Length: 130
Image (tube, rainbow, N blue to C red):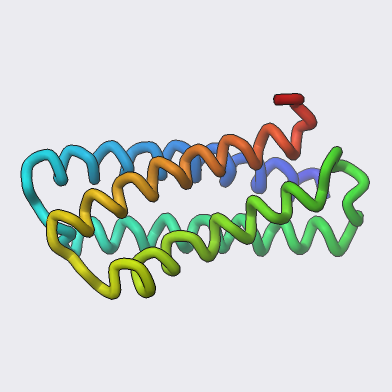
């Protein structure tokens, strides 16, 4: 079980760094007037798979030990579910597949917001007050 905890924490660090990187990259692309291309959409898909893998590990840990290790398990779970559904929701319902420069701006800011959600989920799991 300790190994799963280490992997879950490692994926957590990876996800916030990844979303920060693609948020900055997306902002750079938007400033240059570019729209979303296959490379950026692929990076978004990789980020989504990263969050899903982290959620699966978190679910396995939850089933094995319950929520005893978390200070506020409900809030931590809420952040995790939000991180999974946020980017696909924005892309498919708000942008409706718009890959123009406007779509690039929206997805860049959504990635930066997801970066903040990942940081907040970590602090909630570790019990930091704030």
